[in-house]
Length: 142
Image (cartoon, rainbow, N blue to C red; front, side, top):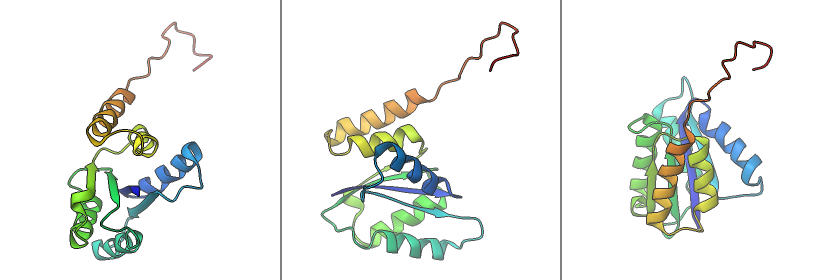
């Protein structure tokens, strides 16, 4: 099975998980998430990750999405996966956003690995745009 694992600082990962359930279906068991919240020790977070991935086997694949490359949620999760000898079946992406996560969930079973990686990165980049407001001087509508 292919899992999408979301990790972040604060409650971003669980919030994004909630949005993914709205958009991709709430009956999914292939989306997992956990957060390093304010005041939580890295050791406690590590325990949360261990519980979250305990049912995942070395035959499964993980698409790991993190808010920041190099952040504690990502590095701690990678350490847990390394201890379980699961890094070889893990793809890792940082800079998590809704476009990245939604495409990961919807395309993980459709595209081959190289195309999947390319689509995730390109679609995520493409989703970031400045929204141009009408500058006709009319303040009535936003």
